[in-house]
Image (tube, rainbow, N blue to C red; front, side):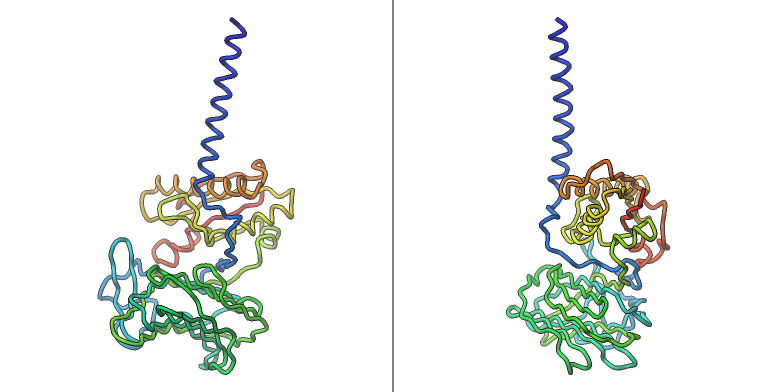
Length: 347
């Protein structure tokens, strides 16, 4: 009888253990395989400018841009807000300077492109210092990166992009190296590029023919920071805005791979390092739901580091703080973008 009870207890414990680990495995399986994702772009951490037009009303002028050229319109629907150019024109973000090392990100939607272009133009002392053209066309599309009023071309490449979907454009300027990305893929990489101090920024829309449009869903400029190991060693805290999730979900986006891979390398290089992973949200929505979401997101990062990057789970802890620890105002799109973050705290 005792043997029967012992066997029953063991079977129950084993079944419970198996169930828990099956649940953990299932949770891990829901995340993209980030070890294999070749995304190297790391967004700058200190936001200098951000707008997703979330506080702009249809018919208003965009408060954070100076508009030059034909009128630009805000399109709203199905959870999307998009500043749309229907004719050639320019947007000048309210930026008076950029640091030596910075990143630029824009989510852009081309509509029926035949010969539609967007360009980022950086100026120093009223002279064009760098221009990055992205020309959306059925085939071939083209990317051009040039400096000094086009007198020196850094890169020119035919590219294949599905323009029916929003495109993530990113530029990374770091210590004289200029890299350009579309949807996480590096298409240009030039080094020993000397740029003057940047004091003006232009985002140009150029449409070669009627019936086309360029829509901007978000624009962000940020200052680049040293890598994870340097920051965590110096300050004990690493703040990341580059770990992204599906809306309202704890599922990581593949473009989060670069930051998480950097953290994993830092942990591997320093076997004694232990981290608390904190999830933070903005204040939009229900506070309790935000708290739960931030907890699940922090746990998702921990789970991926353990299950995919083989980090010892005893070295990691996670916590969700919701909107309780803002680092900026929640009254503006830029402030809210700053508050949506993941932090790694040295223990």
